[in-house]
Image 1 (cartoon, rainbow, N blue to C red):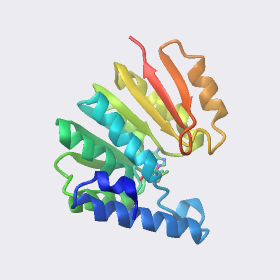
Image 2: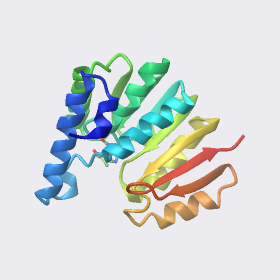
Image 3: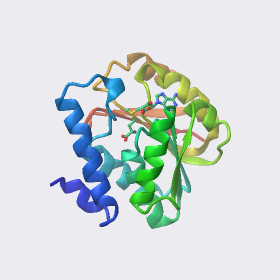
Image 4: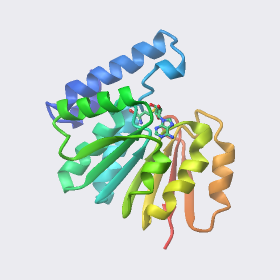
Length: 198
Ligand SMILES: C[S@@+](CC[C@H](N)C(=O)[O-])C[C@H]1O[C@@H](n2cnc3c(N)ncnc32)[C@H](O)[C@@H]1O
């Protein structure tokens, strides 16, 4: 049993359980990254949920949704305070799966996954209070540059895997910007906590 999944309701919990079990099985089988769903850990999911509950952003944007595990966590929070989540995913089959998982979890009125490059999708969005960046690690700088003008002053950008992977170029890039304050949280795979200044 995954303790974090007890935070979800009875409809979303089995979907979270199933996706996490699939992610674990794929890792244990040693599948290459392109063949894995590469979900965040349950603790990171719970962290996203708690962060969204604390900040209550009207609009949340996720860059790299895969099959929707982290999107479900963000949507669980958004439903509680009346927010909305937009996810994004390059691979069409994953978009379909992710939207199916949101329906199964009873969260499709709160969240949707759009197909395409997250950087392009960001151009149609405004007033973002929370952005979760979890696509390819060597693409983080481009994704950040594409989304930052669409984030509200005081908005938060969270980027996953900044400790588990070499994200030194991205971390250095953030630190020379004057429009953000950023700190690395050594939590799970490493989460960069970046606040847009006002
Ligand atoms: C690490 S997985 C995301 C996992 C997901 N956040 C979760 O925890 O359930 C990264 C995903 O980002 C997608 N991706 C990569 N580059 C992208 C881009 N530029 N725009 C949108 N999606 C992208 C990949 O196809 C992959 O499914």
